[in-house]
Image (cartoon, rainbow, N blue to C red):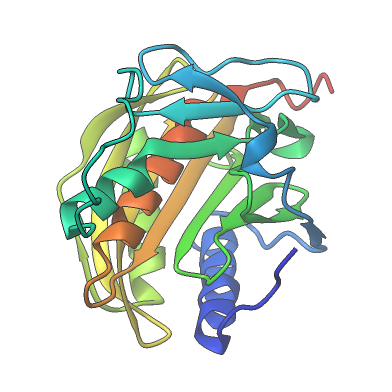
Length: 248
């Protein structure tokens, strides 16, 4: 697998992982880098209108934004690809791999095929090959009382303290793994890179808190990267299920 990644991308990943474990929870030690799952050519297509399929570990799930059968090959020369067409292409084929369970963190998810997967006992981080799309997911025991709004405010404050030009939008309702939660859109600069993304939080149980930090590097003319990041993050978040970490 191609491991080439810019120094800036590596720095972004390291900083985000640090923020994710320090902004709302104790630092988790130890990390494992897992090779990306099999290539997309091995996937089975599934339409976006269907729920993600929790198949066996030998299966892959492909989210396709186009449910219309392919048109016959054109007889005239093809037109040059426009920006809008490039964005549509990026959004049309996000493939998820084998189910992964982070037992200590109390959740399972499916990683994106072709992305690097970094694992810690209570955290999983997905990164695309050039380090411009990052999703870090963490599960921790609830260590104090307080509402979900208060926990989200604490996380936003912690993440904002590690970023420049940080700005967070108003919280809004989300549903992850059949649990109601909150999310906020964020922008700022991390390691000198302009980024945009989301922070999502769910009370997975009375004693377990789940949160995710998703960031996409904003680049000039980077509509395709933004489109891929949006769809990849959405697909992974939709694949999440929660387990009781005390019974595993």
